[in-house]
Length: 104
Image (tube, rainbow, N blue to C red; front, side, top):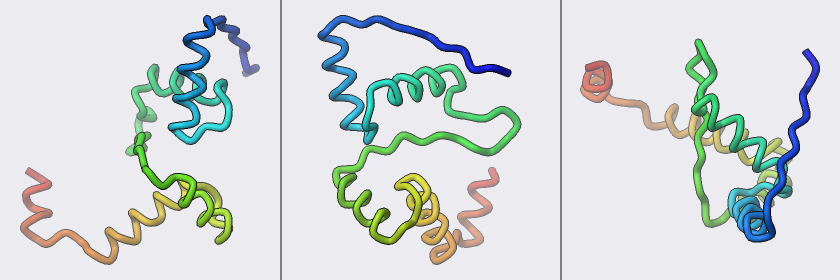
């Protein structure tokens, strides 16, 4: 399947807002943010038939995290965050009671 190109035109006010939103969310370019928002809005952040879900998490220290990931050559902040959550869950697993409540 070939990729399809979509062109949108926005006024100066919306462009400035998109530029600000892109930098706040860690995107370097506005088109990347627009593609993310369009794809995430349609799919609702899930992939059909899987347990995968997209999370949008705002952090105050993104540049610090990015610097750490680049220095340690860990890939991306998203990959590092997924790894860190898995490590935390392995270190502090749910108790038997918590697992039972989760299943209810």
